[in-house]
Image (cartoon, rainbow over all chains, first blue to last red):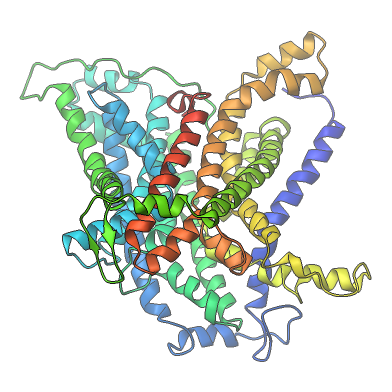
Length: 272
Length: 303
């Protein structure tokens, strides 16, 4: 399309883009570097030697809060939120392909779920559980609070996917004698699988890092982001950065594996 | 990511004769039910309850069902509340302007200046990855950069530009805005990029052939067509900033206030009805802003 040589606009914008990427990743790389601070090093540069001291420190329970426990809770919560988000978004996406009474209000309810301030969701669920006489906990109230954040993303993604999905494939399958379940399983599902994996990634990551909605609804036991938030006020050693490095690398790993899976599926599909 | 135009898919499903079949709309209701139940229980019901509780009476220990309006009159009659609302709106406007500017140019670069689609995907992923990592970590990562002995200050002092470290870099309104821009620009980049990718390139060619300069193409063709993406990005950024309490708390070091932070403090003092009254006011304000933006754009058409 553009065969002419690069314009001056291109170079200006390329520099702008590069600066934006530095802005995005610069601070993050600063804490990753500083987490390898020597035992006597502080919260800022320069590095006072290089060591794994703060990572070892992280594993001792008394140094920080309950790192292992909060990590396990966040992982379990993230996986359950992911599963529910994928299933419910897929079903809702299928539902929205047909016209039904209440489709528009339900769609706007999903959008509302995205725009209602997190602290209000938090407060509402807190008061609801209090009035029902149920103790809030990370697996009940915080689970529901996180779904109000992950589901709209899932539903909107599925909505977009089915907007572009040609019904011709299903008609062809049906003409060949496939039942509607067979059509779904062998035609629709393989085609939308990469998007479903994407929804799963959103569900897991948004839950694993969720903070504002979880803060007031998690009850007695902290999830990992809450543990980190508590640390920002009372931990003044690079162990905070070590924790940040570990969770960020874990997030990167999850993203890399998912993106890899999506590419693999797409390539297999185009080759077939 | 989305390059195809949307096609109308909700053709009525053909009824099949063999076997037992539910009517098609019944299946749709069944499929939509889980979403409705979850949002009903964890969004609709809590919001209704907040509206009810905002009229209740309370003391230090508990709240009592009642119909009183002092939760509203107290919060709206206080000068501090108005200042807090103004402060929150100030953050929203500043962050919105910056993210719109940065977001548009980044998306424009990706959509119109990167030539291969694989390079586009790679660069877009680079922009998206931080969005899927912890906000708290991304906030505290500014501490070693902006702090009194941080990277920026050491560089400034060493270069001889300032004699003593600049104090307002961290724990200030500046730091709050910077961190918010850092956290929320992606919410602007993604929808604008999505809209720009759907612009028919023939329109740009036609404008060029008709003698438009690239500046004129940008102003008269691309910018008007990018409006829906900007509107969706604006909804994200404005609602996120209006709801923010953690960035304001951490990055201002407790020196600045926002409505959500005020609510959080009321909640930790167990003043739930007061927080609920604030929640209702904030919710009405946010929904009015969103409704205003939705007049410009139909979200369903943009997905």
